[in-house]
Image (cartoon, rainbow, N blue to C red; front, top):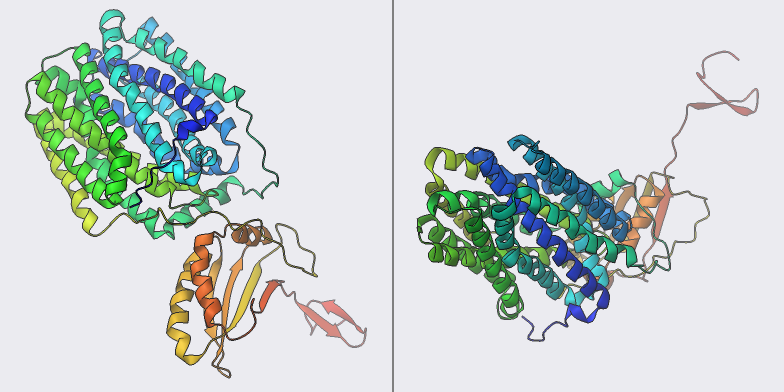
Length: 546
């Protein structure tokens, strides 16, 4: 790992302004979450319904992540974030009004928290992808860590204050504080005037963009590994947070203030984790950091499960919070640095789908376990389940991605073509001829296997490699696209990291470079016959009389 510290993202004024405004918004959100969780207890919700308060926030992220990621990559991210914040402001105001009027029941409360979670799901990919647009690549890790630090600074005091507000004035007052917390971030986003790109890029429709995101992630081994680890991690990671109201009430015999203090302890641990993130990343690999932090979570859960003494439970939650922050930051950074900017929003959204979908399922499972076996046993079972994500590191090691150069190669120059085409013209078939010596075939096939992955990942289809039977040194690479637009986008997605395999092919090719490339536009053949008597083509059955 590099010993050179990354520059501070706070040296960039725009990042600093958004970061501060986000803290204020998150502060209000955490106060609201404490109010919602404790109100569910007061409304007589079951253990499962209490656990589902946490799930109702994370479930929308799983459901909407892919479309949110496609929106983040194809629409102005500032506009998307602004719309999401205004939407959450409106829903939170309606929740506040409903609480003041006494209209809420357990299921209505879950609906409101779900709707607020939908706004979070829309906002998150755009904000996370915007980080990479605002700060340089070597600062992304520090910026992601600072985002987590900001959230958990709010978590240290927000829940405790939320508990005090709920105890003194009721949940409706906590909801009111959250309503006003959106105003700062809305103002900052309205004041931000991002520079428009000098050259507009071709845009995909939403369905095509979503399919491109799924295809890219499915053909990217580093991101697939992170998603698998995130799913394993998320199943058990939500156990403590989803049962925290019951820990406060049943294991410690406390009130809303106790619940707020426990949530604050989790936040303190997360802040400690965020502050130590850069140091750990310099000393250890991402995989080692993830194993250590998941182990810390397990240890913290065991302490919380057995403790009946507030200070000891407090300590367990500090350990849990630290491990939680570091684990999620490590996986998030790995995804951010494994995807180029054109698809990073969708890559992050799919990662979040795996993580928060697993957390939503885990919250429901935890609630059911608590109903049948009690809070302590539920926590112990989920701690045992979390150990599986440590074992998974043996088979699904996080990749080393810091040295990847995923910057785009630049605006692709359209070839000189004689047949007029439009963006929707197609199908388009591409063939490239290589001349390879017999002794170089093993290396050539290895490089072409990587070329196949890259082409399919970036939008090509029906890739094949064929060899000339009459001239064994001649090989032809073939692939196709549904439209000319897809071919153009495919070429504009090429990054510097993709050059490794093509450079190997270039070194093996016996002939001038670039090799012969043919781009062919497919045309359908109609049923046309030639009538010699009329000396012109006629359509239809050749046996039918004229």
